Image (tube, helix red, strand yellow):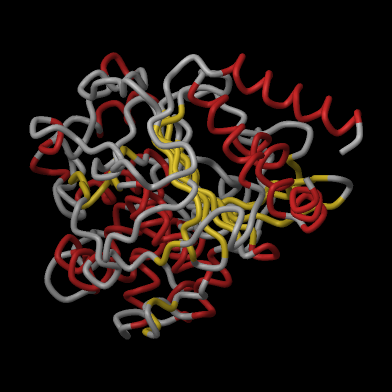
Length: 419
């Protein structure tokens, strides 16, 4: 071993020792169990968000981070493997996890990495628990998209229906009172945040107050009466309440209720039983979801495998392909971005971007939620990354480009094997 190699190893070891401020419960082994919620915490399906700040005070802080490079099998439909054996550079990923534990990269609650359908790395920090559903914020939109895809697979809708006026599915509405151009809102445009609905701030605040008149399809009626005319210009991308419109269609076309359909035809299929899915306080329909990190991984796996789960096609291939494609390129600031993140696009509530490492760009697709929630897929590498957090200001995509990509591209793995 040369002097330079010895010096590099010494510097690497010294750096790791310097950055760790929390004890690590399970770095590199499976000797200890992943942290679980207490009996009181297990009852919580939605964490409290006081004063509209993402500080989740209902859940206690972990005394030590949990870092596992050989996750345990839990008979939950997730195959497991070993980081550094099946794929990946164990040293690079553990070093990153220890930095996260030391608070170097924001307020992470979990980081999971899967390669070729195998969970190779599982870690929990701060308020993360293996069995505690985590608020998903806008990542919930991807679940809505997936539910719609499931309805298409079962024949309650067709792919051609995506281009029909959204209001044509909502028979309780009085279309004579709509704003001009309401028929321009198709199901497809609503799933791309392009409904074109524009209402005043006063109206928006008023519609947030529960009222019998706004139950069921009443909120859609109110929106389409109060909106400015729907035009080609107004149907530019705008991040707003369009998923509520899509959920209204799901409720209208599936047998029974949307809530029962979601459970029976999607979550049960994915073997997800520990979750929360709030009902919208105005419409009474499913709204914001909470999922465990492993459940998030399942949605990523479903998308990665073109809508197939355990040999069954749950969502049409065509739908998944479109949903995860960059159909438009919004001029919004990239969430979790940085110098290595570019070309942001949008599909059916899925975001897309390119992550660059060592001069090469890798196309990604991701569910994203405020506070730092991600289900990020890199198909070229057959790689999935799941993150939960409670820090709205984050650089997670940049971090994935800088620290996780190097651990899974060929050059880094060859270097690791020679050390």
